[in-house]
Image (cartoon, rainbow, N blue to C red; front, side):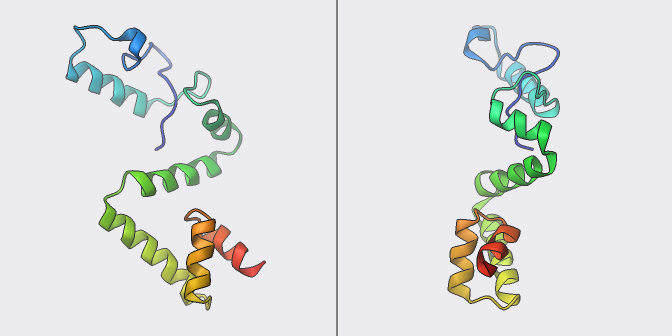
Length: 119
């Protein structure tokens, strides 16, 4: 899950204004865990993401999945995911080079890549 929201019930200790020397790694990790498990789009860290979350949750989920695959997955796993998606495009009958270009332009979204290839 792409988390860009603050806590609903209490302010996060992860912000510089809430930091103190008494803040331990454990406390910071507990705050991060709470932030990750309780998205609150009514008190966002990123208004664009919060708006997307509220208005089009399916698109938000796809975007979060894309960012997770691009930035939080081990490179070997990421390469495997990309290879599988490109293979799917090639298996649909698209030229490999055109499929790679469309896939890159679609930022990893196979449905958008197909739309680009068939336009």
